[in-house]
Image (tube, rainbow, N blue to C red; front, side):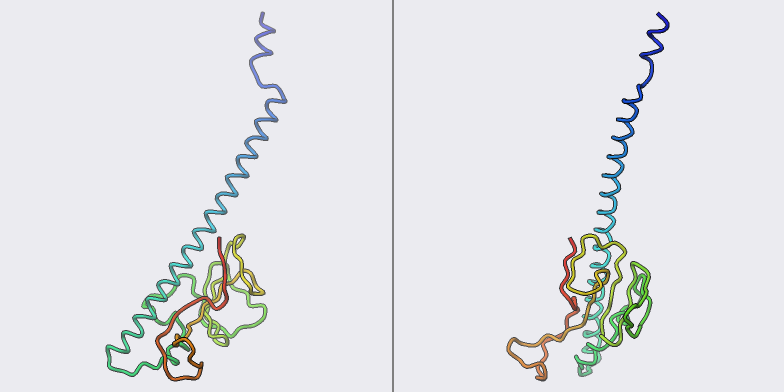
Length: 171
């Protein structure tokens, strides 16, 4: 009687291997989902920062108008967008002159003076699609808004807009 109880009391080797395999599958699915949501949170943080910069641009133009100054849209378009804010951007590394293999930490911002672009270096980019050579960076530029059909050198300017310099799709 004691021998029968001893055999049925524990797991067999096959049951143990199946349990370990199931735990491994569940863990891999969980890690994949965690990375997905981490990248989604990074995208949301980047877009939040861009929206703050857009608001900073509006405040910059409004400040110039409130002081009764003539707004030189072209001069404002050449400014570093990070200077429009009172507090520094989180992860902002400063102004640089672009080099082909510029190394920046993941999740940081920098301003490229030669291209006049604000660049975000992504930490996770499995779902990021860009037309650029470097798939780990998203570029933003201040663009002059003109009426449709107006030449680029025309003096009529409707305003400024902070927009992606190259189209991208993230998710």
